[in-house]
Image 1 (cartoon, rainbow, N blue to C red):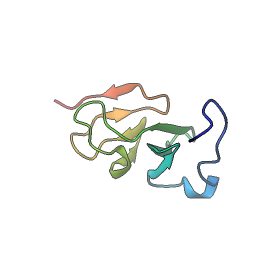
Image 2 (cartoon, one colour):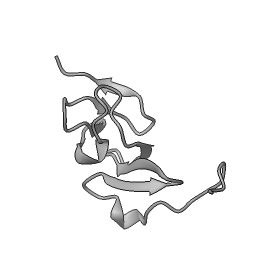
Image 3 (cartoon, helix red, strand yellow):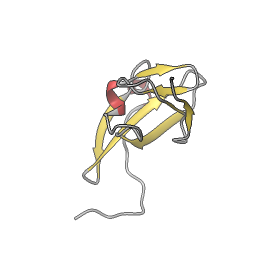
Image 4 (spheres, one colour):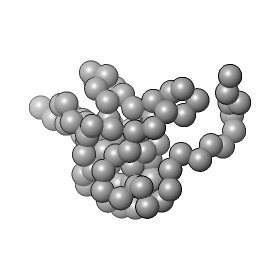
Length: 84
């Protein structure tokens, strides 16, 4: 059982440098990342397009790019770019 609607420590700042970081918080998969603009994002570790783990993606200009089809999400979870 987990206490929900509270703060949990997810990572040290130095862990969020050049690649996404996969974590489980309250038994839910989460990806943490710091974009090139310095903003930190914490999203469900699942791409909205095909469900691939975003933690296997790449930090690009604008946010986090899914390694499967290249969909780019910003630190708020908004989709910024869909290839094709």
